[in-house]
Image 1 (cartoon, rainbow, N blue to C red):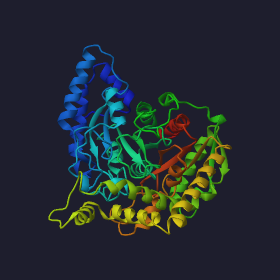
Image 2 (cartoon, one colour; image 1 turned 90 degrees about the vertical axis):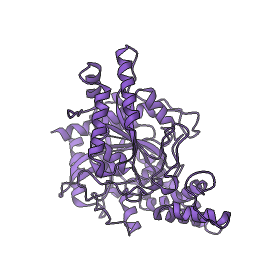
Image 3 (cartoon, rainbow, N blue to C red; image 1 turned 30 degrees about the vertical axis):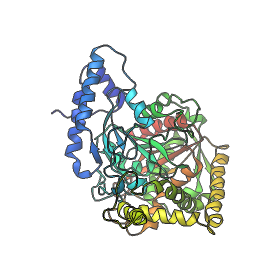
Image 4 (cartoon, rainbow, N blue to C red; image 1 turned 120 degrees about the vertical axis):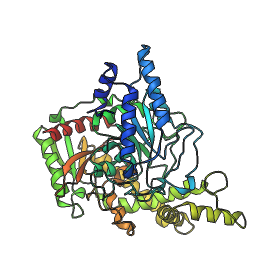
Amino acid sequence: MPELSFASYPDLREQLLSKQTTCEAVTAAYLARIQSKKHLNAFITVFAEKALVRAKELDAKLASGKTIGKLFGLPIAIKDVIAIKDERLTCGSKILSNFTSVYDATVITRLVAEDAIILGKTNMDEFAMGSSNENSFFGAVKNPLDETRVPGGSSGGSAVAVAADCAMVSLGTDTGGSVRQPASFCGVVGVKPTYGRVSRYGLVAFASSFDQIGVFAKNAGDAALVLQVIAGEDKCDSTSSDKPVGDYAAASIDLSNLRVGVPKEFFTDALAPDIAAAVNTKLEFLKSRGATLVPVSLPHSEHALAVYYILAPAEASANLARFDGARYGYRAADVKDLTDMYVRSRSEGFGAEVKRRIMLGTYVLSSGYYDAYYRKAQQVRRLVREDYLKAFEQVDVIAGPTSPIAPFKLGEKVDDPLAMYLADIYTVPINLAGVPAISVPAGVDKQGLPVGLQLIGNLFDESRLFAVAKILEQSEMK
């Protein structure tokens, strides 16, 4: 089979429409790559037969002269926390390892309506809890750039699928950085939209006031196109926004009018020096093209991680209460009574990190601790959000590193949860504030490992983020 590779989706689309290749050939090539890179463990389920049938149907649609969708023939992978009808929905957990979804998530309906081809479901940290993709019941995912290292998490499988060219685009979810951090670790683009920009209907909830579905791609243009398709109001999700969706794919900007905020809180001793150097090089590139770099302060950033690890586990403890072995999912055998079934099903079905967060969340919500922890954390969350909104009165975008560290070795931080949590110090505040952000490749560190630069935008200002990201990609080409 000839090796098929495409620079971008527009490149693929042009070849499909000019009959230089077919959806079937493209899909077969991606499925072959998934098989050849199986050792990376990026996929939990591969839809080989269904994807090829779908590809043939799309080829027939093109041949018949019917109008084709915006994502015609696009090979895409989906994080296994998003529902696809009649397919497994495991969330990377033993407790749902054999559960089959009975409906499609809204984002799936929208992708299929625009003629995308879904290749399979990707591996992830269990219930999206983790920063390394080592917490999956189905095993750790390996970083294709260095297979001894983690790909980041929790959407590690989706990041690897794109980085290893096993899918052109993939969907992940971002609760505290779970799209942007693996994008940084794998050298790809990862976007987390504004909270409410994309419907969460059909997304298994971790922390409902934080979760957003995001997009991985090799370039900002492809990510923009897919986000444009999946974004928008959904009557099935009361938290989805009715604000109009912009033409993200066509976004452009005059850098001479751009004010880029550089927060001092993002450039501290916690940041590896060569990551800081790579990010600063990109900032200087923007400055050389006419942008103005403006120092800004986000004073409550130092509290963001503590606030997140109170609020997110609290929401998780409530959301995961439904997984009790009674209605669906894993059920312990040879139980004594109903209470024993609940306790053993959850004890055996959940992994260590999930149990840790459920216990932490239950504790902060318990009588006598609610005011001291949960209520106080909610108040500080408001202050973090106000920091960002005040900063956006002075600047158009905020820029800084995506992660303070490079991808670390598999197993290196497994026994030290606090060290693992610190990998998210630059991504978590964005979820607390609900604003959009995108991680774009910013070169490599001294070890040759990828560095990500994070661009943060004002509420519903994804278009500007994509426009700046496209300009930064031009600097990568030089």
